[in-house]
Length: 245
Length: 277
Image (cartoon, rainbow over all chains, first blue to last red; front, top):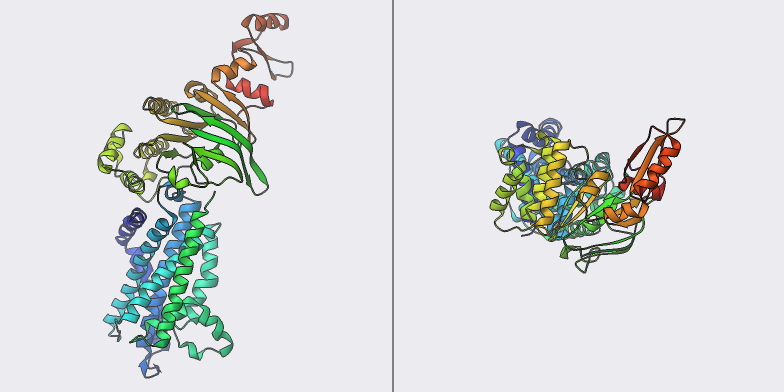
């Protein structure tokens, strides 16, 4: 439980922000825009493999929201604590392991990711979108938050300025949101791009999150997600272990 | 208690430390004195585990700080030069999180004691950004003490503070010594090193150029300084072993002149030809 102080600190900050209307609004605004534009606008009346487009879209928006919120919060926070507020020095000087620091930060990212995706779920339920809260859905959501929060620690540790985190976001996170099956099935993409798409971790979240039961492709995506989660988590620990100002 | 041997550190193309060696005894106040950029903060960062040296050995109580930092983290506390308080938390929350990270028992009582000791009780719910510079420094000191550290690192603790707060911090440092703590203090204020330190190491451009008690260091260059303005309005200083020698030259040169006791800056000037700014 050495990670708990790190996690607890983030929860104090989150609780404070939750009471500001701006936080909930900014968490919801992007998925709502996508929901309106793609779901109710462009996608109205579309069907994908016998599925209403909105029923297809909403799990993808949950994956997208959880990725954005887990990753962005953690990456920005770590970058800010390390380069600007210097609060990160306190973590490093404490008698807790690098793994505890990463676990605390990642779990706080998971909470933020789950909070954001639950807001999307509420919007879905209010608009009577069909959603299946199955094991694949829940495991994909949790693992997605954990995976991207771990990536957030990695990026927060390697960036040299606040602008750098935006660069990673622009070149990695935003394109991943559009090309990995959030808004349309991956099968519709030209074959030449498919190898790149299947390398992207969010692709596998989008596959797993739409499964009603865990079949072979779902299991494969689960393993790929586990692989990325362990990889990012391990790199994050290594970066903190070797931290030096 | 602390052994530093041949410490080197480079930042890009700049060599911050060129083989610095010194040792610190248990229970003493050891001052690292030098101008800005001398390497004082780099030494403290290495000793407090937030920076890794390129070479050399550093041990605290026989434990290698670089190889086994986790073994000494519970014994040390530091007040950094740059305020690293959590601006998103209140004073109380800052102390609480620090205490939790250091697994302190009876934490609430210890926080209360620290708030009382540093006269922060009324501001415990204030955010750090709402406090004055002096008050923020008191929070940093309170935070450093709640883990009851054996060794306390204070990096430029009084820089930018008004004389009243500076005196309060001096009292705190003296009290920390009376409580049996070893204090490592970096400063570029001559009078601070003179007033507080049992021993001083003088750093200049990443090298330790002298070490000893303030009295011994002053004796080594001479106890009396004759100051006189030359024809171009520049201050010329001469250092002498005795006051009589200083007066003898002063009489030859003629008034106006000043004769005063030497201080650590005179030691620095004598050794480097530069002033401590």
